[in-house]
Length: 298
Image (cartoon, rainbow, N blue to C red; front, side, top):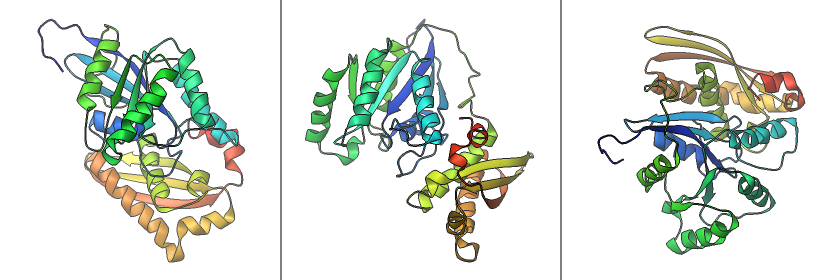
């Protein structure tokens, strides 16, 4: 960022929109400098809109990492997609993230139609350029740029931190002149309980396959937070009895692996010792029951 004297302070909300696995959460984590959004190679990892805050002397950018846009197949999916749609209506700038060379179909066309109708300024971001040939990056940009009134197009690699600073310069220009909305030290508006459940859910997505990760709900029953330590009691709900055995694993091996990895990440984030106690319970067809969606803030 330019350090000119008397430069006006800008502040506002920015939506990171795209299909599942477009790189939204990875970009958010890179911008914030902390892991506040979970990441996995499994599509539809993000269920809730995640708010991340980047504050400097010149701006406060509040990012809304929206769930990946997709065709909903059940009550849970409908609630997830609605989170993405709702997020677009409250922001000042919309960033559409598209993976270079990724296949696009009906879901993408529906998302573009939705963004096209929005009155906000729009930026097209071509992601994962570190893993794609330059020709593919240019081709993706050329195909998508005419579909919507994008003010800018920018190729980015969040993993390699390529053009992330350039993106922040563009966003500064698009955000309104405004006062700071959040404390300058705050990096997310998500409550600690939510962050804890997400760190656990991330490990489930990283270590289990097929429908099992999508059929799990992590609920933090309670936690005690002391100066140098934290104890967490959490329940992993699954849809069917057969899934319970998969999550627990032989002699409890999978649950131990999930818990150990999640605990280490929580200790790194909170910078203190964490004792993590996990239980697995069956709640048949919880994905269609509103009371369990409410537990996730959906």
